[in-house]
Image 1 (spheres, helix red, strand yellow):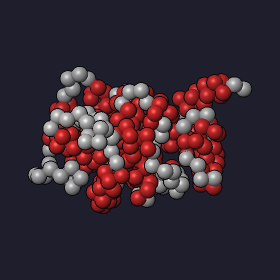
Image 2 (cartoon, one colour):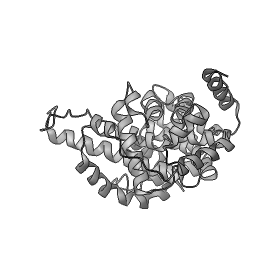
Image 3 (cartoon, helix red, strand yellow):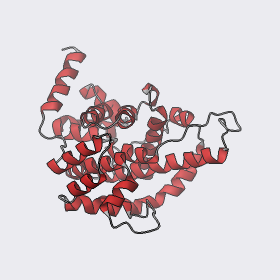
Length: 298
């Protein structure tokens, strides 16, 4: 059988399976409302009132030290405004996904959430460097400065970057076990082993699912290429940030991404971002306390 034929069959199997994460009716309606050009915060608030656990989670997140708002937020409508549409939609999707994550692969939800924190932090840190540069387009050593990146979009990327692993784990259970065993035993990156066995990676599968859920290209394209930064023609900076955040999350040992094997840090991602090892060291020091915020999705 040709590789293209086997890939088509795999994609067809994924689309037909009943095991991949889906949105509840309430979550689906909220998601549809957010997609409207002039979506109504009032309507979203009303829809959320039908899902008490979701409303409680949104308020818990917006009031967490991670966001650090000076005053406590009690109104779900106020929380919606502060979080923004992309983050809100990713949290809504993650409400479904995280439940499946916990049942499917212990530690993956913690890994994903910490990666979300780290992705957002790196974006904010880079944006602060841009402000300090006072309009300079290059660093003193000649490296190009990156344009400002949306930190909330990066939070969404971190939350959802490994959703493809859920598809593999629930649709191809035997293959998933084999992938984890080989990656650990032979010390290979998980996506490399996935492509060897399934002819597709969790990044590509995540891209398919997120695109199906109508999230924007700024989310599904970096997810597709987060282990292959140089293949990204668009949103290269976001893809590079996600790659570094994922690496740091695994390096620090937060949660479990499928293997304890850790490759070298991606120098291509570092070069794309125009950062150095000192920047990486300072990020590690600054994000370590985020491990205490992982309960906000419980």
